[in-house]
Length: 576
Image 1 (cartoon, rainbow, N blue to C red):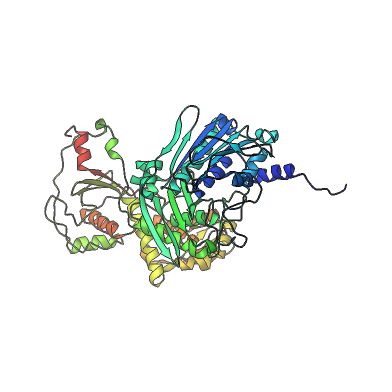
Image 2 (cartoon, rainbow, N blue to C red):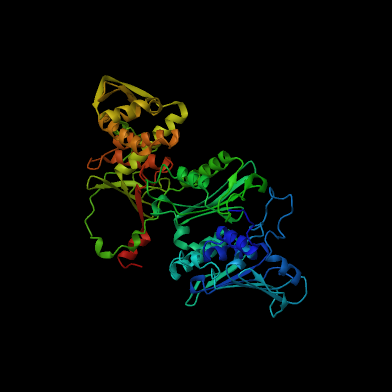
């Protein structure tokens, strides 16, 4: 078989398959062109799941008839000079979108230049071009895409239901709207308006409008800059985590991306506060000098490559972790509970007194430092104590503490688990974890595979304060444990650590594996549910929570306490 050249139309349809995968791809390319043209308003009309009509109108700089003819030629662009591939400052730059769309649809481009002149329209049908002719249009550009994929009917078979394609396209516009608050956007279907956001001042106002007040009320702002690279945005609280990553919006220099490095950094930032299978809601903007990021590594420009990936990852992890550590209380939404779920009871008197030597010893027995300040002898909690003063323990598991303007309910096991974990991490970072040799080394019987797994990780486990070695084929011998654990269930810790290592696998970073081991040990040494605590022990726990980062969530991402304001209580009883 002889080699022959493909026709230009065939080449265009092949190229279109890489750039235009579905109707949402058309919307993305056309909206990006509108933003690059300096538009302040972009309107999208969507019919028949994008197969019947996609219309994108903008008020940008527009084009004259000469540029209209060039716009549908492959690799013709106004955004890139011959030697500018390392300095890309526009969303589009290849000159492939319009020729690709024209190759698989009936395309009409109408435009009137802002610089002066009349409006013109040009038609493309399956790659065949008609000459420009006069048209009626305000300043800007309007592009109609009809009968998408009529020239490649096989592609139609791979499209999903009209409603699904519509949702995907609307999501593209939502993402664009998040990244460009200075531009107004609408997305209208036959039935309703799915996106309608006016031009706004600032990213925070745009995020609130697009994602809603609930997201903003359960998120913390973050911002950090290093070596010319800046990251900012809003990170959702662990208590508002989702079952998938659909609510993660990532942008690099204003471009929506799906980047493995950024996604991995986000997972690393939440590793201490979210369990496996849960994903934070998040909006992240990364600003990077164009020469330090390559956006030309994917046909749809959905992926990027950084010159210094380590810098970017460290920047994101630090920014999000610092923001989460500074957020004390989760939003509980308790005020929406029904009044019938609360039953009045007669309060028991509480003996208010300061911390004496007995209380200090009780706190030390729990491996918790006692509060340095005494509990005031007044029934009203002082503002110095954000988590208030302990008033009672219910069901031998939950601490009730009165605050200045309400009360908090603390899960004693979850809270103490976080405190022990943070203490172990802090100790390891400062001077290495102090270990305590066992007077009688403990032998733990295990499956031979588990023994091998633990022996292979012995050096890493020693960094976490757990010193062990293989003891024959079916056991390990434990010689030292972290001193902070006190009288811990050594065999239980070792068995859980073995399970943890099996789940983590070899691809997890050393730091993350050590932290997982520390979290497992902290869980075993925490105050258990069902243990009755004295008032001094409860208050010592509250004081340490106030001084510990990330104390609002346990090591598995569950909340350690919930808060109910006095105003919410009054609403429950009809006083407001």
